Length: 309
Image 1: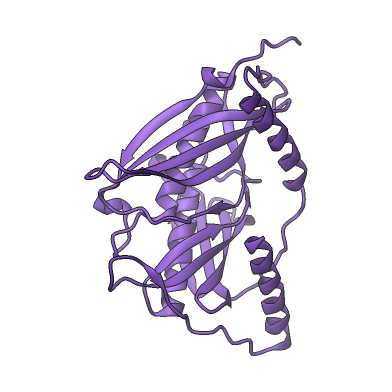
Image 2: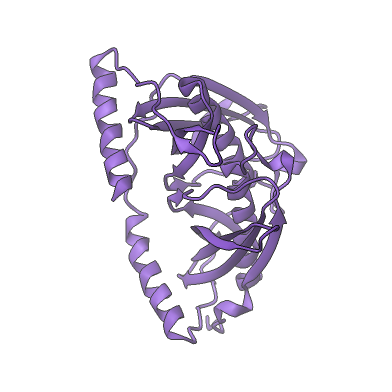
């Protein structure tokens, strides 16, 4: 089947959001989960415009939060296709923060997500239009995306047999779904971040700020009426930072069948907000009480070292 290629400009999306109080933490900073939800929406729109077909979130690369975004700031998202395969595509989203009073802008994050073109049964369809590259910059981006593809097939370290410190339960309601009838990937990431933030703040007993969320697979769809159970726990601490593991289990309420659908590692830092900024502060150490916990702590420390690289 011959499919006409399309340039990235044909599906690019530019959108602006104003950070309102309901989007922020108690300290007045944009919640990472809200930002991830907006990124997912923009990327999903780009994927659907490129394919003119149903597309679902399949993967999110590790996302770092290096610059604080405050209530009252504006956020500009620029989403475009940077790579295509037969049934999947990589979407890159740049996030710029704007201080509305000064007009100063800053690139705060770059997110990369993979979407899959699916049929009515949510099975992959090998009909994604190829990407028509029209500039050296687009060719470089395409080559870099192709290299990232192999890394995404490497299974993450499975350390999710923890005892949750925070439990969150929800039922998928109509407003939580994407246009294709399953739980929105962005909505789920927002729920996961909420649980992770609470676990970090409970452990630190101080305000916390997000630093990153590791790559995440979206293997199993969650449907209308399913129950969603989210567990989160601090699994490692450094001097000022914490790793929080998050596990998602769905339950089909009519049958009682359960399945683990998503896992992710979030990193938070304790912060002191008494000054003009958000300065990192030491956090309470995580103490391993058993040989199993000590082994898990060592694996978590290795993950932290890998993130720094």
